[in-house]
Image (tube, rainbow, N blue to C red; front, side, top):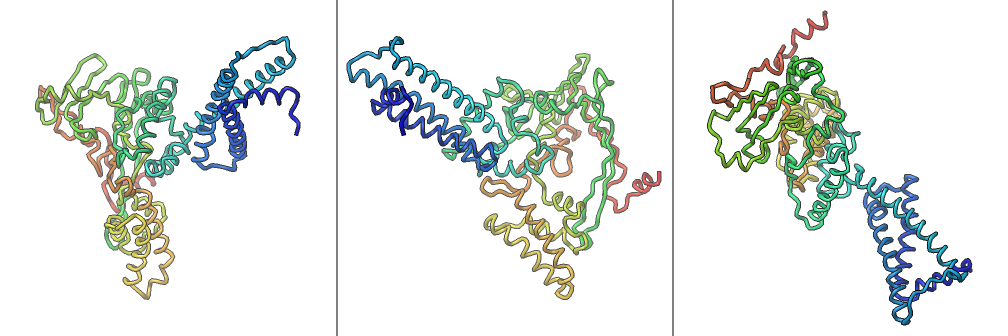
Length: 472
């Protein structure tokens, strides 16, 4: 195949030195591979995250490195030939070379621009965040995919808007890459994330706690560990509240994050589960300091600890990466009909299977459905055939619950990541509202149940209030 006029001479000049030849080879091969893989990406024919790294990070780097080698090779060739590189635009050959150079420069700029844009887009994708560092991020990505925020891109919460945070978090991501490469990352990933961007700059791009939300009617269903898996309901009015300068004085649970109130706290532990110092600043500027037990907090603790301004994430600490407890996971499966509540003693045997010690996760996933089937077969061999389908469906559901919450490779088990929302299973609200935090004048932080909710029924089998409401 004959090259167009000017190309052969131009190519001969660029490849005259081995370094230049290597540059042309690297540039050509990386360009062809990039174009091919990018084409497959556009057609939706490849979704492998590791091919994404090759396409948008590795190959553009090789392409750029090859481009850098070409002028170096040209200079080395001129030095070896003991002559200077002369550009004489009066010669037609030189003119063709300049035109070709400009055309190739435009092509290179287009390729690098596309690669840079797609590279940034790829590293901002959920695929990159959740699937590339598979062992590290598998638990978080699994929880994310079944969360209320599963359609919100990871970067919307972890980076948010603005170039400064984009650059800061991308630089921080480099250290995380090295932690994965050299196997120095923590197991499990420590929480809370202390350098997380304030919720006002991320969460509140969609949510608005200052808007008056009023009260929320809530029915919570749970099941006893008895033979009948007895259903019980708690009925309450949850005082979400909210409000501020525009809609009235803040009230209810969202009082804590209103801009008219500033609540700061100091925790004695890294997980912020033991709060020992609370300062409340009201709109008129009055400040009240509460300490746990009314004790004086050592200056050394106050000096080395962050006086953190309370925001959404201090209560909604698992807004996306939500892990179930075995009890609540089974309760939701019962309530949704995914497992048959009529199977005798299923809540108790399900909890036993979920909380047993197993030699490995694989062994647990294999044992759970088999053990459940064995239990009901031995319980009543004659009746087993009638419930076989329900038992197998329950076994699969309990197996899936274990699979979604237990990750031995990251040392994640039940309650590794407790939620601070509420106070049923963990300290949550009681970190401050336990009646233990007292000011100098003896004033306690309000710990009355009625502050946040009105309880209409507590774990009743058939709450009368529901019949009353339905009748009305």
